[in-house]
Length: 160
Image (cartoon, rainbow, N blue to C red):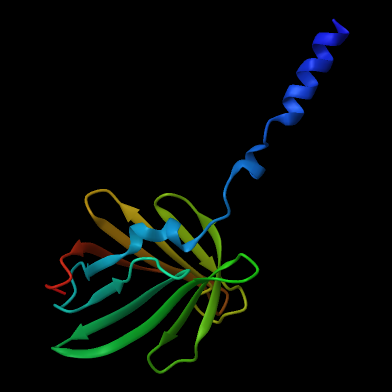
């Protein structure tokens, strides 16, 4: 019996643990974000466009159009750092650049966080069924928790 228990213990020790068996996250895991996304209920031209992952980055741009005029835009870089983190670096129109660190990733959701940022402190992208995407920003403003959702649908980039 002792030999069997010892053999089982050796075999279990040789198996990779769940944490060590997982590959580190990479921007390639965000390939589902690539493409063009039109704002649901927004004016034509409103939405986001993301490049395919390459060179350890995704590049994105968003635009909000109201009354046929661009009223807001932002440039975004999602990149892998030398330390192995994934950063979301955003430069909104009229604001300073801010960096958020990825804190959660699944096959259809990514969460970036910067608790020191004024608002938002969290940026979330959720891929939904039927070619829909919801970007959400959330955090506290003057002690009150707030969220803003940006629903989008996948579109042909030529129509965006």
